[in-house]
Length: 103
Image (tube, rainbow, N blue to C red; front, top):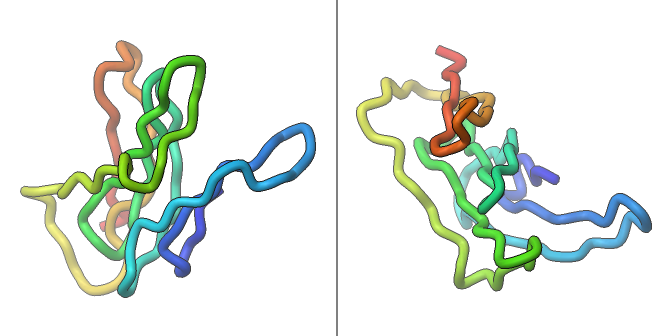
């Protein structure tokens, strides 16, 4: 679940609604907006900051510790004030992810 302006993300049990894990991505201004799950990670977009946050998944979907979360800078992308990166999906080969900009 994307935390939007809280700068975080959570993993929620579909069966019980319980929070299984909580990850903090940003301490300043952010808007965690979209998520895509690949076989090895969950990727979160930040619509205000030019980054993707990667939550790597362990064997059998094991959830990582906060220290395992990686922030990946997006370079070479035009950025403006307000919302930028918005939307993310897996590519058919699942080796990369792709995003779309709202600009």
